[in-house]
Length: 248
Ligand SMILES: Nc1ncnc2c1ncn2[C@@H]1O[C@H](COP(=O)(O)OP(=O)(O)OP(=O)(O)O)[C@@H](O)[C@H]1O
Image (cartoon, rainbow, N blue to C red):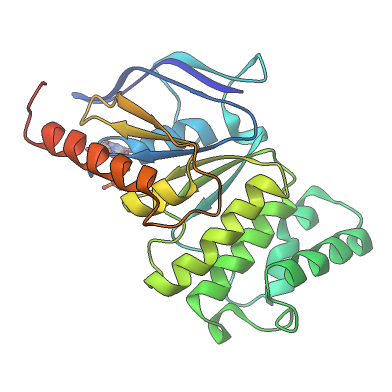
């Protein structure tokens, strides 16, 4: 389990987090939805060690860790592929940096290219393929990290709706076939409901969990599943109340 306890972060006079708590069971898919500027990326920056908390703890499987940088792989909206390196060489970056056996790493990456539908594109440069293919390559690179926890900061938001839909299956593959624990930020409520075991609705700053929506429908899900329609109405109503400062 990833356990975030009483996390506090202040930027000058800005209280972004003031005792933020979250518990994410191992192997689950958690989704964060909240108003723009509420502190979601700051939370990920704290988890990856980019910024330090003023107070609070993060623990993974019962051990308090300075941050989740050593247990988490991070994937962002921007694929951050190096434009001058082939897709294969981009995917191999984590293992190259870690000094892993090159032949074994290449074999592993080749199998992942196959699973992500990128077989035959290994020698292409990032500029020669579509945005969806770039994100699939970024997913391969994420899996090369061998980290159990995967932090996803709006990984699909730059893509068109059809490409996003096709990548949802790959995100579920990360959870179900690769047994990763996923924590994803998205602004797309429907996307969150299609993927999440637990969807957390967040408040404005200082950011807190307003409500947790537990989804039981088996995956892959359909947007017209009655549970999802009910949940979407509830999530939108809660966000509306938050944005209108309605304390109900
Ligand atoms: N390094 C920093 N220094 C000062 N203020 C910062 C820093 N990082 C973030 N902030 C502020 O913290 C607040 C929360 O920002 P953050 O990017 O975490 O929000 P967010 O929920 O990810 O927003 P969005 O959904 O729009 O991406 C903002 O007011 C932002 O200006």
